[in-house]
Image 1 (cartoon, rainbow, N blue to C red):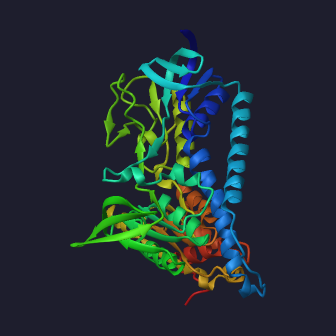
Image 2 (image 1 turned 60 degrees about the vertical axis):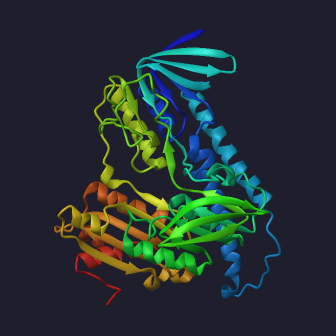
Length: 459
């Protein structure tokens, strides 16, 4: 067996793992990164990047359908989904090659193989050329997550999020179990392409952890796009009937069915924390327990990314990986989890940072709330994107503690509010800050102005 030694060994080459590797190398450490599959993890290969590539296709299709409003007469003759899928693959391949070049440029040793943790200071990597024993001073676990499969009869008939990205032909109809981020984004993609989409969700509302008003408005807008919803529905079984799948579900006291050509299981993610039997790690709810320095219960072992639970976001994994690397190398660093942006790339987009109004009240805060509708924003009207609104939450002293944006380019606009929450900025500071006109983020200015008692363009 080949043996190697290093300062830091990192298991998992996804967002948390590769960022940890780069940061550790920047700080002068010798780093070995072990990854069984493709570098970049779920996000780059079967998550964030490929779905956003297909969402760009969906956006173009939506623009074509609304072209008549702009005086443009055109006709959509056909959709070749294999071309859209090939474009998606090119984007992923380009990003993957760039990442590998970046890691090589940082002199990070990449071992392609399945890693098995033997102790707090040793990982054995099973490669095509045999086993490699890696001895390390510090270890970072960044093994991510996998699609969750519900334990229901017929679950093997469903597609996972990995599977549906590999489709080269559009189904005539698609049923999606789960109306969370994954389900909503795939519903947006396939509905825009003309597929009949039905979402089946156990909860009786969308996005139960998010702003209730924004979730209710998003539901209304998605229904208007032709997406059907079965809320408060418990899936009982999936059956093959000819060329179609039949999904039986219970809603109230009634058992009902939905038929579709394809079915997507989008019921969340399973954390890959069940592979560390050799370590006496503290694990709660399937997540490796860490402190704010990303330290596990085992000395010299750190963890970051999806495997530690919480919000499963690539950008949060970036920050956690960076934090783990810095602390492993003796630096003092912790994360501010109060200022983590979250984005859902539906049409329109929904983005948040900080607390909801209800969460603020639960924490004993008497929130001050400012809102502004995109119906009154000049830039939104020129773009033909008048749906949605901005909601900003501040505490009793006017310090911004949360923001929610449902509307065009919400994923780009949320960074301003993430900065405000991070810095503890007051609403009156943003109300006095000059924003460009016309611009979508004037809606943020208007909402903050409302909190500060300086509202301009609203009664």
